[in-house]
Length: 377
Image (cartoon, rainbow, N blue to C red; front, side, top):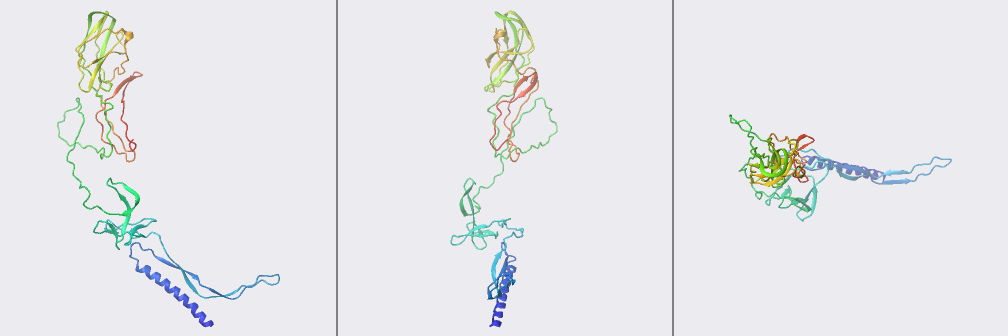
């Protein structure tokens, strides 16, 4: 009976070793299988035959251990190793690999869902992405606006031949302004301009400020009127164009003066405002001392060629704020910039400035600058 027990116990070791060899052989056989995870065998003691129990220690004896004879070994677990394998380069554009944790979800022939690390995919006759065993790959769908629908899993298909074919660019428009004081080119050359936008973001709107830098010509004449009036002193005038939005362009540089005593002043040959950008004119005048700041006398409609000034100094309007400014011509463009990529949109149309002479320092101020959307600076 003892010999038979020894043989059977040894046989359990051979059986366990055979299982271990089978697992190793399976690992070797699948060494080239994509997504395969090797397994390891874990052993455990099977049973113990107790021949006598132990005794607890006493004051006179130290106690004894139980006598137990092992009856062999068993396979406790065959566990796969889910550590990431080596990612290799493939010529198939549908071959995928998962870096880190995760599984591909595929649909079996009966509609059940299975999980796999095997990323070898191809397309079937319906352009659906399937595994080598014919299981459909599942994922989120995409609607007609190319937006992901995270409401459920569906089979992934590639709409070959259904998408619109790309068309080459046919028309290109280039806009800008020419500097009348620039040099005339004599040598032909190709001017390279940088790409400002891919057209995915809006262009700044210039309707909030359509003023351009038009300066009235200095052909206005001043003379003492024969009609008695309230003016007494020496006066000079300046004229500025006003657009439909109330924006005022740069004032003319009229420096000629006229002296009157108890009368009024006639202004003649007032320059017409360019249409349709400007709709009226502002006439400014000094006080009776004949120098210093200019103040608003009147706002007249375009096309009026003469004006009779009989406004007392105390009834003058706002101060002209661009004295000494705009000796040169200035124009402005506005672009939006993407907050993430830094990419610029196409520039707006020409936006004209509002000028001021704050603290006797000439400056140019832009009003009503358009505001971009949330993803733009």
